Image (cartoon, rainbow, N blue to C red; front, side, top):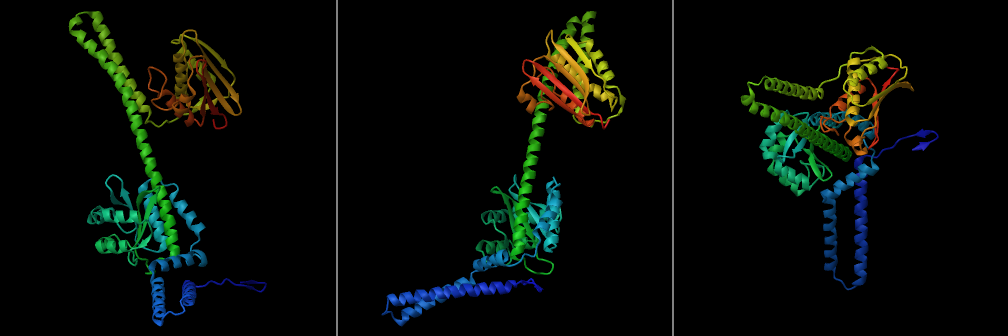
Length: 478
């Protein structure tokens, strides 16, 4: 009520609204029955008193069914709560707090624990439990609880023999239900068959959690501290929380499956590389051992055999070293370094083994705070990759410059180049390479070193024309 002299908020009670709507429904029903009776009386003027009495009896029976209908009462109360009665919850506040508590959680157990604590505080109940469905064994498992320990949860589920009947019932009737007061036939059967389980598991209110037709589990609450039953507004908020929880749990499960698939793919790829290299080593050593008894007295053969054994040992050590790079955390030991001197030093190593033309254009660049040992690995890897991509008569171009706050080192070649698809999907990923000999770890390690320096690496390539890598290091943080 708003007037210049009065500002009043007037709220009608839930009971008043419910009784008013009930009276309105009864009035409309009796009015409809009276009109129908008048029409029948007009059409059958000679009807007997007994027929009229029977019609009135049927009308009263119909009215009794309407008034005693549990489903109608539930729908009426829900309509009042949703449209006529002010909600006791500030949904914006509740949802902001729920999002803040759950957004950063990536473990299913941690997520379930946070949600049961939130529900317990919101609805003032000491026992809130999330039961999840084990997809492999088709049974319930404890996700998180404010009242049950992990051992208690296992004992409860074991007592129900996996919860098969409960699961099948909830899958068919995916609605929030009060297992203590509901008059639905399936709830009555469930209550009678598993009363001990429901009491031990402390389940009164049960909210199935499903997403995309996939049953995730259920959210279960016991009686409130004050003994007050949950209202329709409580049910609406619980339904929303259960739906959101189901979506988050499904996303976590899908993310875990994706992670496992990637791990298996990486393991299979690594195993293939190792099998190939170890097979070659085994063949070489096997051939040497076969000829050793025959040519043992030949000094030249013994010398070659020792070289083969030493090369095999070095190859195995090299394989182990490359694989260890994947798990090592890069630790930088930064010192003030002249970038051009570091590039020139790397080129001097390459000049001794390269069979191609090398050109350089080193522009003045400020001294940088970098780890020279780690960064030289990047330079050597890029230069060796360029050398391997070239045939006779090719050219490697190395340049440095300063531009827009970046110190830039570019290494280019006019070799075979790379496809756009390979650059987008495989470049800088371990075990992905275009070389016949190699494990695809060098560029992966180089990218990690560059990013550890807060820099970035860019690539331009065209098949048949060559490739250019550009390493960019920020000047302002050096």
